[in-house]
Image (cartoon, rainbow, N blue to C red; front, top):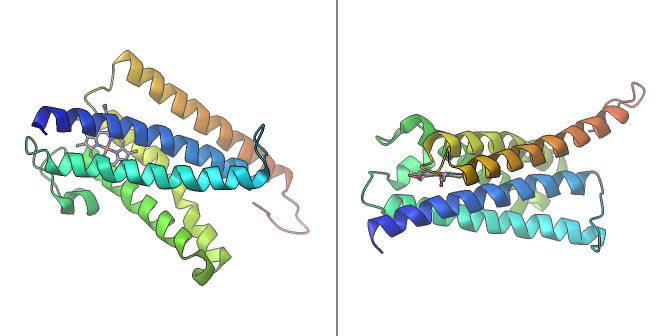
Amino acid sequence: MTSETLWYANRATGAITLILFTLVVLLGIAVRLRTRLPTLPRFGTISLHRTLSLSATAFLALHIVFAVIDGYVNITVLDAVIPFIGDYQPLWLGLGTVAFDLMLAVLITSLLRQRIGHRTWRTIHWLAYASWPVALIHGIGIGTDSGTDWMTWLTISCVATVLTAAGIRTAAALRHLDPAEGVRP
Ligand code: HEM
């Protein structure tokens, strides 16, 4: 593959990862609120959430591999794991790395869910909410396509989707706020 092809592949997989990641957050909230998607049973929402998170992880892995093997810029495997240490756009790339590390923590604890217990799993699962905006800012800051019409609309759609879902989630949590029972988030 030429460096130019790798660069396009890196950008394409970045955009796809952002879309999948947005859908994962949306479906995670739907699962939590026990929302049934039209034509899907409830377990369908859960398995779609799981499948899309594995797909997002696979595309993220490709996104990182394309960035590392593209010799045009100097990005090492360590830069993809340890934030803010690289030579190339350390701040924006570092935010991608932070999002990746948080996603990894969420993924690993989900795979070990039976062993670590529900409470620990759920506390760490909250990191998914934190990693989404960090990944978004990474893409806006470093991406060649930032500012193009299609990327602007993609970004606006992703932000609108997550803000709407988070708003519904917050409203549901507030409805369940009962001083006698404490918070049931
Ligand atoms: C959840 C984590 C991540 C997401 C959702 C994500 C998503 C994105 C998006 C949307 C773009 C903009 C693409 C464009 O403008 O066409 C981008 C660019 C980029 N990402 Fe990531 N990224 C993540 C993590 C990482 C990590 C860990 C690395 C480290 C190797 C990385 C390396 C890059 C590079 C080098 C670019 C610039 C591509 C260009 O020149 O336009 N990303 N990413």
